[in-house]
Length: 265
Image 1 (cartoon, helix red, strand yellow):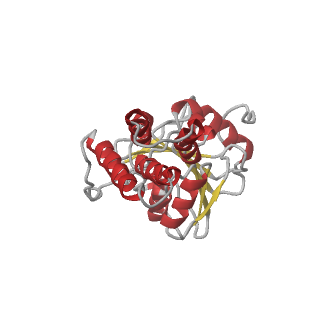
Image 2: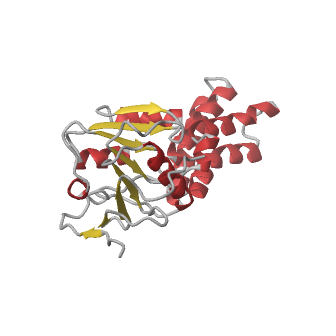
Image 3: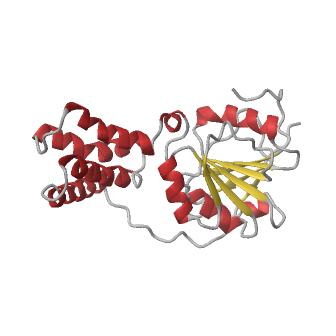
């Protein structure tokens, strides 16, 4: 008879309230900020520089949105309106600058993996009880984004050595600034060996979970932990499951995982 996962329920205080602006107000505010900056700079700097800085405001503001289509609208709103309105005379190649900024923050590899979606505050509450680790254990947030997952892991494992891995260079830089107590580096989560970590945390797409499981089977040591927010490993019974008040289940697996041990592609 297959084992049933332990379901852990924890009583805890509700998360601090966060101000959530109704859509499309965040986009309008970012577009307005970009236009104000552009208007203030266009008389004192070169048009291309003014365009680039205003576009950077839009791209930076897009990091705060949830969902790829909203991020795209926020990031591209200013350059599209500037182009259609004829606000600045640029050579044709100059309009590639907004696209270059967007690809800098959201490289093509990141589009194939999970979108930038932060770990909700408190989503990993109780993880330390379901997946206990000794002091000094090495913990990896694979695809750390802006560092929200690292902050949640630090709350669960304050004595752990926390590592973050992020493909986007700008996001990795911002994560280092937000999480100076963690070792954050730019890299490909699929090319990096997970074998040296006692726990690996992922917040991926459901389509990526089979690949996550194959990589964990191939590289992670027996007794280590694989933790996934929101999406389960297909066909594998978890060691435990947390019902998070953030609206997502936390799926917890202790290695070795059952399976054929095939290496990830």
